[in-house]
Each structure stands twice: as C-alpha cells, then as structure tokens.
Image 1 (cartoon, rainbow, N blue to C red):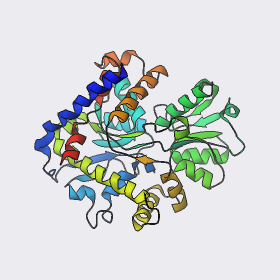
Image 2: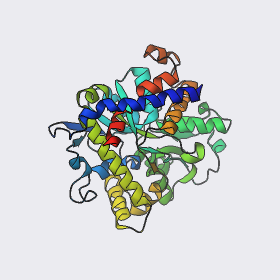
Image 3: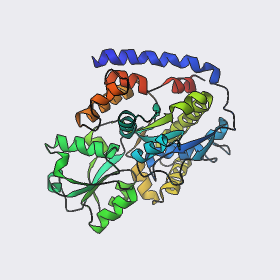
Length: 350
C-alpha cells in the first residue's frame, strides 16, 4: 500500500512545470519574513545563504533578488512556537521540525505547506553524567522544547523501543535549548532532548553525557523542513522559487565545506555557526558532524513523512479524526497534498 501511494506521489513532481513562468528573478520589493529556531545548527543554511563572503561578495539571496528579514530577532524557542507565529500571520517562510508542522496544521488548521527539506538527524538525549540508561530516568524529569517538537517525538519513540512509556517520566516544557542546559547543570532536570549544538555544548562543558543521538534512535530520520504560508506562496510564487534556489546553493555549499575540514570554506562555515549560536568552535564542529544537510523532496523523504504522520497518530499527538476533519483521506493523501514539491522542482529546473 505504501509503495502504491509513493508511486502516486511521484506524479506531483511533474506538476512543477506549471511554475515555469515564475523562474524570472523575484521582485526585490517583496521581503520574506523568515522563521527559524534559536541557535539551531539545523538551520545554518539560512545564515549561509545570507552571508556575503560565502557568495563571493554577494549573498545567495541577493544573487536571486530575494529580500529576507528575520521574522523575530534571535529565532523562535521551538517549532510549535514558530507554527503559532505562522497562525498569527507573522511568518512567510520558516525552518522547523516536520512534527510541529504536521501537528499544528492538522490539529489547529494552520494554513501552511511543506516545500523543501532542511536536514535529517542532529538531535540527542543528554543526561547527567551518572545516568547510564533510560530506565534510570524513571520518575525523573526530562526537558524538551515542547510536546509538538521533533525532540519530544524522538523521546516517545526511544522510550517505546526500551519498553517504557512517556508516562514513566516527568516532562518539563516548553524550554529553550539554553534553558535546558541551565536546568541540567543546576540539577533542576535530569535529562533533556535538544537539537544541536546544545547536546554537544553540554557534553563539552562536562555537566552532560550523551545517552543517545537521534540517529541511534531512528537512523536517517527526517528532521527539519521549510514551511511556507500557503497564501504567501500562492501570491508570490517566483519569490518562493528563488528563495529555494538560494537554499539549494547554501545546502550544497555546506556539504562541500563539510567534506574538507581543512579548507577555508569549512572554517567559514564554523565561523558562521559560532556567530549565530554563540558557542565555541569546537562545539560547532562536533555538532556539525552529527547533522546531514539536505533539500530534496524525494521518495525517501515522502515515505518517511508518511511514517512520521502515522507515528504521530499512533502516539495520539494527532487524533486520527483530524485527517478527515482537514479534508484528507489518510496519511498518504495528507502527504501528497501537504508536501508541495512544485516550487522546489521549479527551483531545480533552472
């Protein structure tokens, strides 16, 4: 059944040809309000695309005549908070985890669509140094960004694999990455689940220990995506296409830089990471090694998106009735309609 559904999803890639008229540069008068998470190295592509040095004196956004501004200075505390900002009309395009995008769209009807991938893997469960396994956290407090975050979802999945339940723990949320670190260091919580570089930072400072990386929990799992406000995308298709052109170049530049840690390009990548995370270079380097940067919406992405949606329903983070309430037949129909790859197809075809 999944194979049949995925084959049908491939057909929507062909729909990208309808965007051919919008491949001309975007009008510079349109400014995109961009959302991202605070100090989240998953979202470094946004900062790379803004950096003039990366582009040889002209940023990738400038190259494609795209104006961007941070939707909120310093970023959002979690993907759930960012989706709330989408609902309030404060974000046009945003970087955030796939689960909060799915959850807030289905549960609350936030009018968004997924248009590209950002990364997979790159989070971790961090515990006090004396903790050796998750069973020792029974009855203990674990910090998470929010209950709609990818990190909470990964904790649910990890607990299930260890024959435990989320009800075995006390959950402290919502917490920013910095607050999770502070609370673990002070003893207010016993563990946390966060995106990089917060796990690497806690380990580097000696008050935290990695219990499991997200790739240990779910190898090559889908993580962050680019989400667009549907109305904004419909009204500014060329702007969205050109935004994704810059994102593609930034992602390819990142992967080239990571392939040669001795290069000046890699050092610039680290410097950019240090600049927006306010973490030491050694921490940024360690964190970058745990993240895979991608942009493609392909069969692997789509099948994982279907699996994510099913898991969110299984964990009752999304009541099964919500699919029908939002006009979707099932998780396959939802994926086909909520993931709009036409903008990315147009961006890649030029």
